Image 1 (spheres, rainbow, N blue to C red):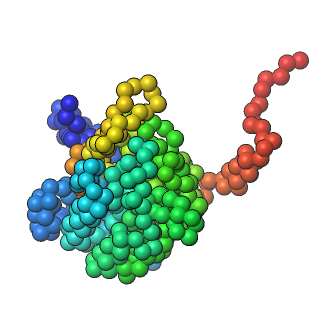
Image 2 (cartoon, helix red, strand yellow; image 1 turned 90 degrees about the vertical axis):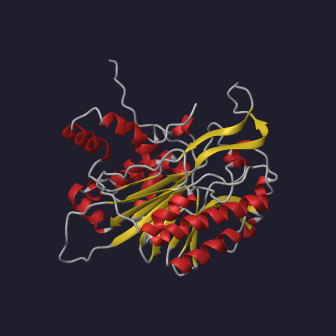
Length: 389
Protein backbone atom coordinates (compact mmCIF):
# COMPACT_ATOMS: atom_id res chain seq x y z
CA UNK A 1 0.00 0.00 0.00
CA UNK A 2 1.37 3.41 -0.98
CA UNK A 3 2.32 5.82 1.80
CA UNK A 4 0.17 8.91 2.38
CA UNK A 5 1.98 11.93 0.95
CA UNK A 6 1.50 14.24 3.93
CA UNK A 7 -0.80 15.29 6.73
CA UNK A 8 -1.35 18.54 4.85
CA UNK A 9 -2.76 16.80 1.77
CA UNK A 10 -5.29 15.05 3.99
CA UNK A 11 -6.24 18.34 5.64
CA UNK A 12 -6.65 20.03 2.26
CA UNK A 13 -9.08 17.32 1.21
CA UNK A 14 -11.00 17.81 4.44
CA UNK A 15 -11.00 21.60 4.02
CA UNK A 16 -12.58 21.28 0.58
CA UNK A 17 -15.78 20.18 2.29
CA UNK A 18 -15.86 23.30 4.49
CA UNK A 19 -16.75 26.90 3.76
CA UNK A 20 -14.00 29.53 3.86
CA UNK A 21 -14.57 30.53 7.49
CA UNK A 22 -14.68 26.94 8.69
CA UNK A 23 -11.50 26.05 6.79
CA UNK A 24 -9.74 29.08 8.28
CA UNK A 25 -10.85 28.12 11.78
CA UNK A 26 -9.65 24.54 11.28
CA UNK A 27 -6.19 25.78 10.31
CA UNK A 28 -6.09 28.25 13.20
CA UNK A 29 -6.94 25.59 15.75
CA UNK A 30 -4.52 23.02 14.32
CA UNK A 31 -1.61 25.30 13.38
CA UNK A 32 -1.96 28.46 15.47
CA UNK A 33 -1.10 31.89 14.09
CA UNK A 34 -0.66 31.89 10.30
CA UNK A 35 2.82 31.34 8.89
CA UNK A 36 2.64 32.89 5.41
CA UNK A 37 4.56 31.40 2.52
CA UNK A 38 7.77 33.09 1.35
CA UNK A 39 8.45 33.60 -2.33
CA UNK A 40 11.78 32.01 -3.25
CA UNK A 41 14.20 32.74 -6.11
CA UNK A 42 13.31 31.07 -9.40
CA UNK A 43 16.76 29.49 -9.62
CA UNK A 44 16.23 27.71 -6.29
CA UNK A 45 12.78 26.49 -7.30
CA UNK A 46 14.15 25.17 -10.58
CA UNK A 47 17.01 23.37 -8.84
CA UNK A 48 14.59 21.73 -6.43
CA UNK A 49 12.49 20.57 -9.36
CA UNK A 50 15.48 19.23 -11.24
CA UNK A 51 16.80 17.56 -8.10
CA UNK A 52 13.43 16.06 -7.21
CA UNK A 53 13.16 17.47 -3.71
CA UNK A 54 10.48 19.57 -2.05
CA UNK A 55 11.25 23.21 -1.32
CA UNK A 56 8.93 25.05 1.06
CA UNK A 57 9.33 28.33 2.93
CA UNK A 58 7.29 30.16 5.57
CA UNK A 59 7.71 32.98 8.08
CA UNK A 60 6.55 33.62 11.63
CA UNK A 61 4.80 36.94 12.33
CA UNK A 62 5.87 39.28 15.14
CA UNK A 63 3.86 41.76 17.14
CA UNK A 64 5.36 44.72 15.29
CA UNK A 65 8.32 47.07 15.40
CA UNK A 66 9.99 47.84 18.73
CA UNK A 67 11.57 51.18 19.54
CA UNK A 68 14.44 49.79 21.59
CA UNK A 69 15.41 46.70 19.59
CA UNK A 70 16.02 46.22 15.88
CA UNK A 71 14.49 43.13 14.36
CA UNK A 72 16.61 39.97 14.46
CA UNK A 73 15.59 38.25 11.26
CA UNK A 74 17.09 34.79 10.69
CA UNK A 75 16.39 32.19 8.02
CA UNK A 76 16.71 28.65 9.25
CA UNK A 77 16.33 25.42 7.28
CA UNK A 78 15.91 21.74 8.04
CA UNK A 79 16.60 18.95 5.57
CA UNK A 80 15.02 15.52 5.17
CA UNK A 81 16.34 12.94 2.74
CA UNK A 82 16.48 9.29 1.80
CA UNK A 83 19.67 7.30 1.47
CA UNK A 84 20.92 7.35 -2.11
CA UNK A 85 22.70 4.04 -2.62
CA UNK A 86 21.42 0.64 -1.44
CA UNK A 87 22.83 -0.61 1.86
CA UNK A 88 24.62 -3.37 -0.06
CA UNK A 89 26.86 -0.85 -1.84
CA UNK A 90 30.44 -0.29 -0.60
CA UNK A 91 30.61 2.07 2.37
CA UNK A 92 32.64 4.62 0.41
CA UNK A 93 30.00 4.74 -2.34
CA UNK A 94 27.17 5.19 0.15
CA UNK A 95 28.99 8.06 1.85
CA UNK A 96 29.95 9.82 -1.36
CA UNK A 97 26.41 9.62 -2.74
CA UNK A 98 24.99 11.17 0.44
CA UNK A 99 27.64 13.90 0.47
CA UNK A 100 26.76 14.78 -3.12
CA UNK A 101 23.06 14.90 -2.31
CA UNK A 102 23.58 17.18 0.67
CA UNK A 103 25.87 19.45 -1.35
CA UNK A 104 23.08 19.86 -3.91
CA UNK A 105 20.47 20.56 -1.25
CA UNK A 106 22.69 22.97 0.70
CA UNK A 107 23.53 24.95 -2.43
CA UNK A 108 19.82 25.37 -3.09
CA UNK A 109 19.30 26.53 0.51
CA UNK A 110 22.05 29.11 0.03
CA UNK A 111 20.19 30.55 -2.96
CA UNK A 112 17.26 31.15 -0.59
CA UNK A 113 19.33 33.15 1.89
CA UNK A 114 19.45 30.50 4.60
CA UNK A 115 21.60 31.42 7.62
CA UNK A 116 21.45 28.16 9.61
CA UNK A 117 20.81 24.69 8.20
CA UNK A 118 20.34 21.43 10.09
CA UNK A 119 20.63 17.98 8.52
CA UNK A 120 18.74 14.95 9.85
CA UNK A 121 20.07 12.56 12.48
CA UNK A 122 22.99 10.41 11.27
CA UNK A 123 22.58 11.77 7.75
CA UNK A 124 25.86 10.44 6.24
CA UNK A 125 24.74 6.82 6.68
CA UNK A 126 21.77 4.45 6.59
CA UNK A 127 20.05 4.01 9.95
CA UNK A 128 21.67 0.63 10.50
CA UNK A 129 21.26 0.50 14.30
CA UNK A 130 18.23 -1.76 13.87
CA UNK A 131 20.50 -4.59 12.61
CA UNK A 132 22.65 -4.88 15.77
CA UNK A 133 25.55 -5.77 13.44
CA UNK A 134 28.82 -3.98 14.10
CA UNK A 135 30.52 -4.45 10.74
CA UNK A 136 30.57 -2.99 8.20
CA UNK A 137 28.35 -0.34 9.77
CA UNK A 138 30.74 1.12 12.34
CA UNK A 139 32.98 2.07 9.43
CA UNK A 140 30.66 5.05 9.00
CA UNK A 141 31.91 6.49 12.32
CA UNK A 142 34.34 9.40 12.11
CA UNK A 143 35.98 12.20 14.06
CA UNK A 144 33.79 15.12 15.10
CA UNK A 145 36.76 17.45 14.77
CA UNK A 146 38.29 16.60 11.41
CA UNK A 147 36.42 13.69 9.84
CA UNK A 148 35.63 13.82 6.11
CA UNK A 149 31.98 14.75 6.64
CA UNK A 150 32.95 17.58 8.96
CA UNK A 151 35.53 18.87 6.50
CA UNK A 152 32.87 18.93 3.80
CA UNK A 153 30.54 20.86 6.09
CA UNK A 154 33.31 23.32 6.95
CA UNK A 155 33.85 24.02 3.26
CA UNK A 156 30.14 24.60 2.66
CA UNK A 157 29.71 26.75 5.78
CA UNK A 158 32.52 29.08 4.74
CA UNK A 159 31.41 29.18 1.10
CA UNK A 160 27.79 30.04 1.91
CA UNK A 161 28.32 32.07 5.11
CA UNK A 162 26.03 29.55 6.77
CA UNK A 163 25.97 27.83 10.17
CA UNK A 164 25.66 24.06 9.67
CA UNK A 165 24.37 21.49 12.18
CA UNK A 166 25.65 18.07 11.14
CA UNK A 167 24.64 14.90 12.98
CA UNK A 168 27.16 12.05 12.71
CA UNK A 169 28.22 8.83 14.38
CA UNK A 170 31.34 10.03 16.18
CA UNK A 171 34.37 7.93 17.02
CA UNK A 172 36.11 9.63 19.94
CA UNK A 173 39.78 8.77 19.52
CA UNK A 174 40.67 10.55 22.76
CA UNK A 175 38.53 8.16 24.79
CA UNK A 176 39.38 4.73 23.48
CA UNK A 177 37.48 5.03 20.22
CA UNK A 178 34.10 5.05 21.98
CA UNK A 179 31.17 5.96 19.72
CA UNK A 180 28.69 8.77 20.31
CA UNK A 181 25.68 10.09 18.44
CA UNK A 182 26.93 13.62 17.93
CA UNK A 183 25.79 16.88 16.41
CA UNK A 184 28.65 19.07 15.24
CA UNK A 185 28.05 22.80 14.92
CA UNK A 186 30.10 24.52 12.23
CA UNK A 187 30.26 28.31 12.34
CA UNK A 188 29.58 30.43 9.27
CA UNK A 189 33.34 31.09 9.30
CA UNK A 190 33.92 27.42 8.53
CA UNK A 191 35.36 26.61 11.96
CA UNK A 192 34.03 23.84 14.20
CA UNK A 193 32.26 25.74 16.97
CA UNK A 194 31.67 22.64 19.07
CA UNK A 195 29.74 19.42 19.46
CA UNK A 196 26.92 18.03 21.55
CA UNK A 197 25.90 14.43 22.19
CA UNK A 198 22.56 12.67 22.20
CA UNK A 199 21.53 12.57 25.85
CA UNK A 200 18.86 9.88 25.73
CA UNK A 201 19.20 6.51 23.98
CA UNK A 202 16.00 4.67 23.01
CA UNK A 203 15.32 1.20 24.29
CA UNK A 204 12.19 0.44 22.32
CA UNK A 205 11.44 -1.50 19.16
CA UNK A 206 14.27 -1.76 16.65
CA UNK A 207 16.09 1.31 17.97
CA UNK A 208 19.06 -0.79 19.09
CA UNK A 209 21.30 2.25 19.42
CA UNK A 210 22.74 1.29 22.80
CA UNK A 211 24.50 -1.55 20.95
CA UNK A 212 26.64 1.06 19.23
CA UNK A 213 27.12 4.24 21.23
CA UNK A 214 27.04 5.70 24.71
CA UNK A 215 24.75 8.21 26.40
CA UNK A 216 26.01 11.73 25.95
CA UNK A 217 28.24 13.51 28.45
CA UNK A 218 28.06 17.04 27.05
CA UNK A 219 24.99 18.22 28.95
CA UNK A 220 22.79 20.89 27.39
CA UNK A 221 25.23 23.03 25.45
CA UNK A 222 24.06 26.19 23.71
CA UNK A 223 26.14 27.66 20.90
CA UNK A 224 26.44 31.39 20.25
CA UNK A 225 26.48 31.82 16.48
CA UNK A 226 26.43 34.88 14.27
CA UNK A 227 22.69 34.34 13.85
CA UNK A 228 21.56 33.53 17.37
CA UNK A 229 21.97 31.02 20.20
CA UNK A 230 21.25 27.48 19.05
CA UNK A 231 21.10 24.03 20.64
CA UNK A 232 20.54 20.51 19.35
CA UNK A 233 18.22 18.00 21.01
CA UNK A 234 18.93 14.85 19.03
CA UNK A 235 15.97 12.60 18.14
CA UNK A 236 14.82 10.60 21.19
CA UNK A 237 15.58 13.52 23.50
CA UNK A 238 12.37 15.14 22.31
CA UNK A 239 10.40 12.66 24.45
CA UNK A 240 11.97 14.10 27.63
CA UNK A 241 10.57 17.50 28.70
CA UNK A 242 13.44 18.19 31.09
CA UNK A 243 15.86 17.78 28.21
CA UNK A 244 14.12 20.63 26.39
CA UNK A 245 14.11 22.65 29.63
CA UNK A 246 17.88 22.29 29.94
CA UNK A 247 18.49 24.05 26.63
CA UNK A 248 16.07 26.79 27.61
CA UNK A 249 17.76 27.38 30.95
CA UNK A 250 21.06 27.75 29.11
CA UNK A 251 19.61 30.44 26.87
CA UNK A 252 18.78 28.70 23.59
CA UNK A 253 16.76 30.71 21.08
CA UNK A 254 16.48 27.96 18.46
CA UNK A 255 16.61 24.25 19.28
CA UNK A 256 17.05 21.82 16.40
CA UNK A 257 15.73 18.27 16.67
CA UNK A 258 17.39 16.13 13.97
CA UNK A 259 15.63 12.77 14.01
CA UNK A 260 15.22 9.35 12.45
CA UNK A 261 11.94 7.79 13.44
CA UNK A 262 9.35 5.54 11.84
CA UNK A 263 5.60 5.87 11.45
CA UNK A 264 4.49 2.73 13.24
CA UNK A 265 6.00 3.94 16.50
CA UNK A 266 6.06 7.70 16.89
CA UNK A 267 4.08 9.48 14.19
CA UNK A 268 1.07 10.46 16.36
CA UNK A 269 3.50 12.12 18.80
CA UNK A 270 5.58 13.90 16.15
CA UNK A 271 3.35 16.96 15.56
CA UNK A 272 2.97 17.53 19.30
CA UNK A 273 6.32 17.18 21.06
CA UNK A 274 8.45 19.83 19.36
CA UNK A 275 5.55 22.25 19.33
CA UNK A 276 4.92 21.68 23.03
CA UNK A 277 8.62 22.28 23.75
CA UNK A 278 8.54 25.55 21.81
CA UNK A 279 5.54 26.71 23.83
CA UNK A 280 6.76 25.57 27.26
CA UNK A 281 10.25 27.02 26.84
CA UNK A 282 9.42 30.08 24.71
CA UNK A 283 11.88 29.41 21.91
CA UNK A 284 11.82 28.16 18.33
CA UNK A 285 12.09 24.44 17.57
CA UNK A 286 13.00 23.06 14.14
CA UNK A 287 12.56 19.31 13.80
CA UNK A 288 13.44 17.12 10.84
CA UNK A 289 13.11 13.42 10.14
CA UNK A 290 14.53 11.24 7.39
CA UNK A 291 12.32 9.70 4.71
CA UNK A 292 12.12 6.37 2.94
CA UNK A 293 12.36 2.69 3.81
CA UNK A 294 15.87 1.28 4.21
CA UNK A 295 16.42 -2.42 3.51
CA UNK A 296 19.43 -4.28 4.89
CA UNK A 297 21.21 -7.42 3.64
CA UNK A 298 20.45 -9.63 6.64
CA UNK A 299 17.18 -10.26 8.43
CA UNK A 300 16.73 -9.15 12.04
CA UNK A 301 14.01 -9.59 14.64
CA UNK A 302 12.21 -7.04 16.78
CA UNK A 303 11.72 -9.12 19.96
CA UNK A 304 7.96 -9.02 19.40
CA UNK A 305 7.35 -12.60 18.27
CA UNK A 306 6.88 -11.54 14.66
CA UNK A 307 8.91 -12.92 11.73
CA UNK A 308 12.37 -11.59 10.97
CA UNK A 309 12.53 -8.79 8.42
CA UNK A 310 15.06 -6.66 6.56
CA UNK A 311 13.68 -3.16 6.99
CA UNK A 312 13.07 -0.90 9.98
CA UNK A 313 9.85 0.62 8.67
CA UNK A 314 8.98 3.85 6.88
CA UNK A 315 10.74 7.05 7.94
CA UNK A 316 7.97 9.59 7.53
CA UNK A 317 9.74 12.95 7.13
CA UNK A 318 7.10 15.60 7.99
CA UNK A 319 9.72 18.14 9.10
CA UNK A 320 8.36 21.41 10.54
CA UNK A 321 9.19 24.49 12.63
CA UNK A 322 7.31 25.52 15.78
CA UNK A 323 7.37 28.91 17.44
CA UNK A 324 7.07 30.21 21.00
CA UNK A 325 3.66 31.67 20.11
CA UNK A 326 2.19 28.18 19.75
CA UNK A 327 2.14 28.29 15.97
CA UNK A 328 3.82 25.94 13.55
CA UNK A 329 4.51 25.71 9.86
CA UNK A 330 2.98 23.07 7.64
CA UNK A 331 5.20 20.01 7.44
CA UNK A 332 7.18 18.67 4.55
CA UNK A 333 5.88 15.54 2.86
CA UNK A 334 6.22 11.97 4.17
CA UNK A 335 7.81 10.37 1.10
CA UNK A 336 10.35 12.68 -0.58
CA UNK A 337 13.51 14.61 0.12
CA UNK A 338 12.95 18.22 1.03
CA UNK A 339 14.11 21.51 2.50
CA UNK A 340 11.91 23.49 4.84
CA UNK A 341 12.95 27.13 5.21
CA UNK A 342 11.55 29.38 7.89
CA UNK A 343 12.12 33.08 8.41
CA UNK A 344 11.90 34.02 12.07
CA UNK A 345 12.39 37.15 14.14
CA UNK A 346 14.12 36.21 17.38
CA UNK A 347 12.47 39.20 19.05
CA UNK A 348 9.28 37.12 19.09
CA UNK A 349 10.80 35.07 21.91
CA UNK A 350 10.90 37.97 24.38
CA UNK A 351 7.54 39.26 23.18
CA UNK A 352 5.94 35.91 24.01
CA UNK A 353 7.80 35.62 27.32
CA UNK A 354 6.49 39.04 28.32
CA UNK A 355 2.97 37.96 27.34
CA UNK A 356 2.76 34.51 28.93
CA UNK A 357 5.34 34.91 31.73
CA UNK A 358 6.24 31.21 31.79
CA UNK A 359 9.78 32.04 32.91
CA UNK A 360 8.36 34.16 35.74
CA UNK A 361 5.81 31.61 36.89
CA UNK A 362 7.92 28.46 36.68
CA UNK A 363 9.22 27.18 40.05
CA UNK A 364 12.68 25.82 39.33
CA UNK A 365 13.58 25.82 43.04
CA UNK A 366 10.72 23.39 43.73
CA UNK A 367 11.65 21.19 40.78
CA UNK A 368 15.31 21.24 41.81
CA UNK A 369 14.51 20.03 45.32
CA UNK A 370 12.22 17.27 44.05
CA UNK A 371 14.82 16.03 41.58
CA UNK A 372 17.60 16.20 44.16
CA UNK A 373 15.49 14.10 46.51
CA UNK A 374 14.36 11.67 43.79
CA UNK A 375 17.90 10.54 42.95
CA UNK A 376 18.65 9.56 46.55
CA UNK A 377 18.54 5.81 47.34
CA UNK A 378 16.13 6.35 50.25
CA UNK A 379 13.68 8.51 48.30
CA UNK A 380 9.98 7.87 48.84
CA UNK A 381 7.25 9.50 46.72
CA UNK A 382 5.25 12.19 48.55
CA UNK A 383 1.85 10.50 48.38
CA UNK A 384 -0.91 11.39 50.82
CA UNK A 385 -3.14 8.51 51.90
CA UNK A 386 -6.41 8.55 53.77
CA UNK A 387 -5.90 7.66 57.41
CA UNK A 388 -8.07 5.31 59.39
CA UNK A 389 -8.95 5.93 63.04
